Image 1 (cartoon, rainbow, N blue to C red):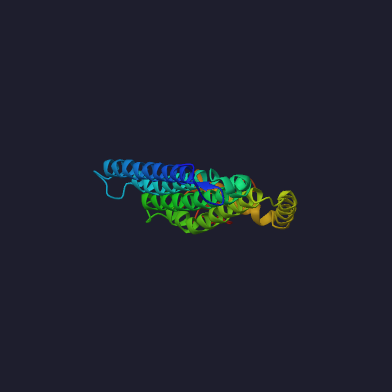
Image 2: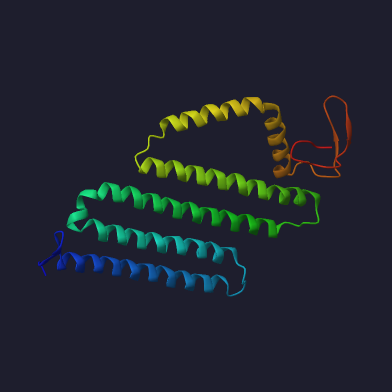
Amino acid sequence: MNQELISGITVQDLVTAAVIIAVGLGLAGVVILVGKRVKRKFRHHDENNILARLVDDVEEIVAWLVLLLAFFQALVILPPLMGQRGNFQGVFTAIGVALVVFGLIRLQGHILGWYVNRLDASTGHAKILISMVPTVRRITNIALVSLGILVVLDQLGVTIAPLLAGLGIGGLAVALALQGTLTNFFAGLNILTDGAVRVGDYVELSDGFSGYVDQIGWRTTR
């Protein structure tokens, strides 16, 4: 068992690595089996149950993360690679972060889709909210991918402090340049989500103007 095969790697090292990978495969299989049972329970009365979809997204990511951890542990126990643990850890962490980001993107897509399906598309309020979903999904995806890239760069040893400072300054400049537009946007968003004012309501403003609400948009209300 201690006979050296190549570059200081013995039969025992290979057996140990194989056992670790086998355990990882077994645990990943358990995750998939448990996920299938849970999904079957959720879909017993509703084939499109949102919880089943979320479990479907989570189980795949967890299974891949378990396999990733098993392969990492199997590699770093080999004598020639022990000194490279830090480098391997950065690479495997980057892959793990990419998997998590991919899973979160899928999760938010299913959650937004479920929310849209629950809305009554015949109402004006719902139509506006539905029209906002693609923008919300796009912004969320960009934020998740950007955060994932920053974490990956940090794990690979790249200094991200100057990049964060640059992004902060750039964001502040954009916010100041679009202050009026952003104010109207968030005010309209507040009206849409709060539901205090709806199409058809009669309103009277403090400056004396009054009338019926004809349309509620992102930036303006008529």
